[in-house]
Length: 316
Ligand code: SF4
Image (tube, rainbow, N blue to C red; front, side, top):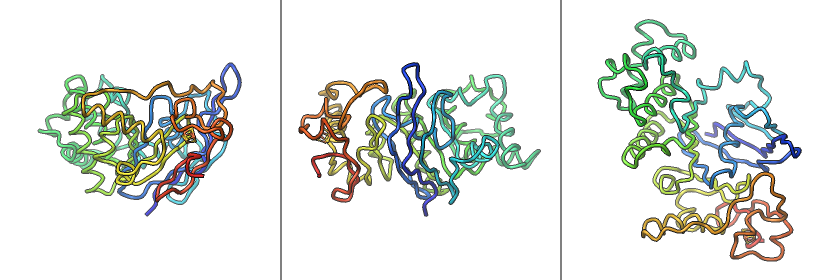
């Protein structure tokens, strides 16, 4: 069952040089209990696309058009008061740095109880039971004792578990995890991804994972949207994307992880364009070894290619 659908989203920024478009006709959907990964290099529009869902964009940003359908309603038209009922409660955010969500002055327990009271209306023993259960679900040992601890007493990985526990305690239906493991070492990264995968499977929670790490995506995501320069350039099921990538950018990204595995580290030559660059045609053309004349003039649209959606003139 489809729980979230983003349709033809266009977002830009009002900069000193004028209006600049950052997101071009981005569309994706999320089923219940599914993990969608949005991947691409820094600045490709992963975070802007997903923060649009929560209406948590910088002041200079402006959503030009599109629809964000959540539970059959277009929430793009919702005001801040309506969004407050969704944010944290129905759609929770796990940020890269958990300290942006945790207050260093309050215990973990206080912070959990506060969100449980706010979003579930529970107080006293009932709220404590929900909080302890949520901490246990993310495998925090001695959960009852740990309620008394302050965030600084927890490691980075344990803090991320607390943020996930907050989402569980509020019965969130969707979790947006924005580079949730970037600041963690490899073993802890794997533990956090295991927890996210487990809650997805056990509690049917849908997850949007924003990451530049294709290794994590390969092991965890069901579906993948590859973004470049504010556009989705390939959108496919996990197996299809990793076994048979179609877009030259996806192929280049996959080659980078293969080379890392063989210790022959390479990057994709060149840089992604910035929002202020004027590039005509396909935005990947300055870096693409398959570039043709048409690529310099016409920006390709997404079309169905062997079961994937791909934006590339090679498949015209
Ligand atoms: Fe390369 Fe052309 Fe395809 Fe763009 S449209 S990815 S430049 S082949």
